[in-house]
Length: 407
Image 1: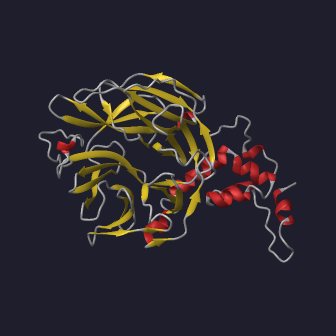
Image 2: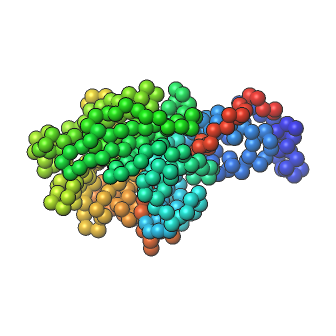
Image 3: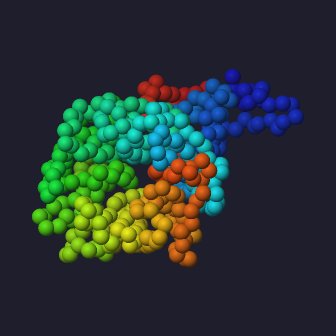
């Protein structure tokens, strides 16, 4: 049965008849809709179900969604205490409304009393580590479609071992990859980190060559431009100095990115040091981390209890293209850790200060709290901005393309 006949049978005589659009026009229209109505439209007909379920349509929808900047972006909010509760709301609501009442409660595919030890995301898919770091508890999850895949064990045995992850998309091979970094380290020395990489298409892990004797940041890798990025520390015996290391997911080769000419804080020379033991917690001590704002790699220079400078790489890996976007002051009432989430068109910075979502107005040098229904009492434990997608963590080898469907 054609799509037109199926649609006509579902509307009354006094309603407008839907014209028989070409397939290309239907795809163009549907590709611009949010995920929620698209999931409902899968019930319209077998043809629409087949189209919306294909990876080709998911890619087209994601591409348009990413191009629309903040229009289709979602703010994901995790409650502060166990058992965790997860909420989502449109990013525009957080940027333009003083109080957010229209939020959606999401369901976890795991026990909400479990600790979420790590999160990384790409194209609407989240890599989550449930419980303490354990290679048997890694999941790929799309919160919009609620599809989940538990990853197989990497086979690594952890003993006095630190671990971090990265997650991204290898476009040339149409494959999502997880990078696991593990290594043992002491107080004044660093052993070389070891790597394993997981391929969703192959559904298997394999070992990679080591990078160098360096300590990778415990933060998840930041994915951008086909590469994962980490802050990496090197110890020369007198001071820890930092570097940005990239890993190309296609070639699986490491590289380095240029640093901006940032204020070195209280560390002498050309080096900087992270927050360490209690003697390091002095105002002005520098700790920096990597992030992503929009389509740009960012460097967050956090001068403890003084300010946080946001540096943005306007053109990827180009010399001289680091620009200091904004400096966020630490004032009374602001939490100990500022994490920028988004910069609005008017220059306001949406951020998470450890317990709340805030807006910083640089023009008036003031913070405004974003009130969020159901989370004001418990607090916000974590927040992130992402683009909803139809990308599935479960590959279907028998998937049909739109051209193969009967219309």
